[in-house]
Image (cartoon, rainbow over all chains, first blue to last red; front, top):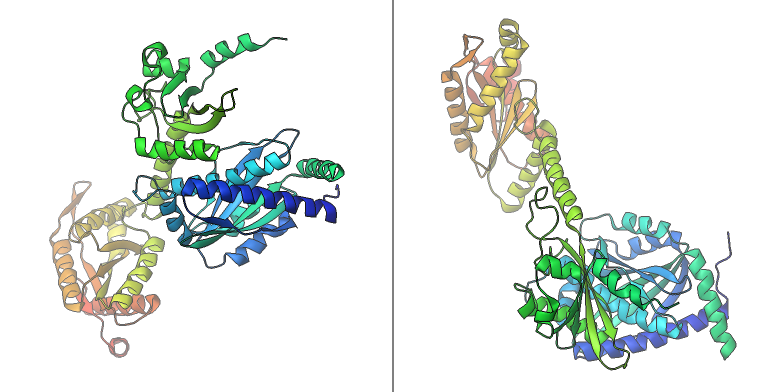
Length: 204
Length: 320
């Protein structure tokens, strides 16, 4: 199997690009939501996709967790899938913030809307940093409430070689909430991503 | 190679609805897919607000989606599973589907004109009616399977597995809320003789008939299940021992009076019933006590109901 590991330089570069993308995302979200949004510098970790289910199953143990998946495609073979993980308790508050105070939308719809706004805002920024642009598939809830959370995640993670785990903490004026975003990237796209990082590094 | 000529015929013939709106949500364009299904001409409605062009739109909901598309320049999506349709359009399977309108998967994408300033929203609509129809059929099958999974094939009452599971839940409920709960176990008297005399079909007939008679005597919240062979159980929520004995005696009377005819032969049957009310026992203990009371009812001459009381086991042993 091809070695998919990142060098320290590549990793730092990616962290930097993600930081910039996050900064842009929080700015956009703040203006859109008309409230102060602070996204902390996210901790990123590159992990073997096979280890993910165990990791998150223990992290979200005993809680009502929800997984929403959103696929993205860019130019030159860059593609992947993001998975957002939240505790369901948080969802009501976010929903209110996004203007869902009337109950015209189902819980499923709120979840997919929130996930798509949060991830695409960030991913658009990241694509820009990578001099690329992404198109997106419709978000899908892959697990909610009573489902077997770890198993669902295992099914999704099986398809992917590398997982970029990004812990995000959204902080707004009146409240804060934590969620996790996982970027799952298949092997070929990882190689492509490393090439892009290398060319960015070469420009410095 | 100049390929601009492709765009118009492609947009016309593509099997996806395309609607373009300006930043004020006025209709700028829609393709043939929309024009034919909605039966409107673009030239007649161009420039009008979207809610004037299409009626019954979920406008507040759409605005929220459109706002995020314009302000964040990110796509928004809507799935038929959450909202069956956005624009009421007919679909091409009017006969094989019970839905009147096309189920739709929609994407709303940001678009900027070449001037770099004017912003638009593209609404893409895909027909998901097939998926919707399959999903409906699947759901019906699941409901039927669930029903089959908890029903006794012969008598149509609950099967043992489901019934016993419900007993567990009812016990938990009774304990949590300190509400009364009673259990009846009953058995057809001399069922073996019935089978020998009328054949197994006759025996089955009696089981089916009596299940109906007894079910008609119960409340909606009571749970009648076939415990095995000719033995049945009834869970009576919110019912103490006195009430349970009344129900049991009524069942004995009605069954004894019920005349059945099988192959031109009249059949009469009776039941013996063991009654117990819940006082902190486990599922197994409760069933065992009811069984002891049922045994006692048999020993005392059948066609009667007996309430369980402590010491009944010893009394039965003495009779032996």
